[in-house]
Length: 427
Image 1: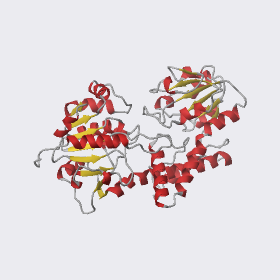
Image 2: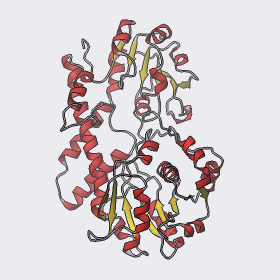
Image 3: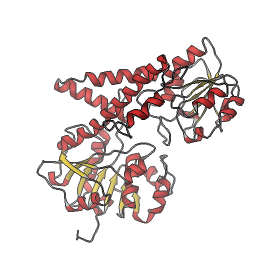
Image 4: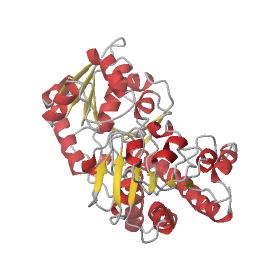
């Protein structure tokens, strides 16, 4: 590669991670080849039918179509200077990583790399994974920490805070082609050995979970003493030791799969190496306690009732198609004696496992004949609904709004029995 030629970049695995990363790389001016062995996925992407929901992704792909090639033929990888392994890592029932599909993609990619091609593992893996890869000289193998967030993946992919890069040795340097790629994003580059980079991602998520655990613990206390966590959190964010972007929003336990996976990895590593993981076990216990908030509140407010519930939101968070470890679906499974009418902007009724569930095309239509409203995913569409319209359509008065989609004072002024995480009855 000459000093004026940009590297061609490949992405192996066109799941959420791969598609968003490929689109962002094309936006930075690179020719991108996206490969996936699933021909159906490739055909959908080529036709503009996205298999994932992510704000801004469709527009970004269309704007860079001239730089993007999607294929199910692995031989195209031989044209790439840099190939990323970019498939999302599946998890098992205990949230442990199943790395078998990632290993298969790595083996396939190595078979088709050019003689000077570089391989970068972007899929999240535990410490020790990258160093165990065989069939490639160490200087051609890197690990890069991914820090995408469902619902904000396009912005995170385009504007990373930093690149954390794992190399085979502390003394190793970045290949000029790889540095050209990373420099195009204009953020700090932090090189370190493989194991440090692999553990860095887990460390980031552990700190996030710790913040959520603190918020959940104190929010529950607020509910009992008449305080309002919504008033306290802004004060914490103004403390320089905590910061304005701190994860201080209480929620219905850890969701989505990625954070749970990292906690499981830490527990497995701690057991293997006989280190202390008591704080991680405490965070998991705290998460499980808060997962039951909606169920407990409904049953306390509607004792013995077998009425109808309106549920807004099925995905695990807003602006994503993912239902993995969704608090909404977990809540519905624990309320089989209620009829439910659900609404979600992207998730279909088929994702709901409930003996008596129906879907509504409109959020307000879901309220008809309902004894309570549960807003379990904070989609922007729900923030646009007025409390007056809700009060007029809802048969009962109970509204569970853990993420405070609605205005607290307005909801109570409209005569609704409004409940939120971290909100005392008199706050």
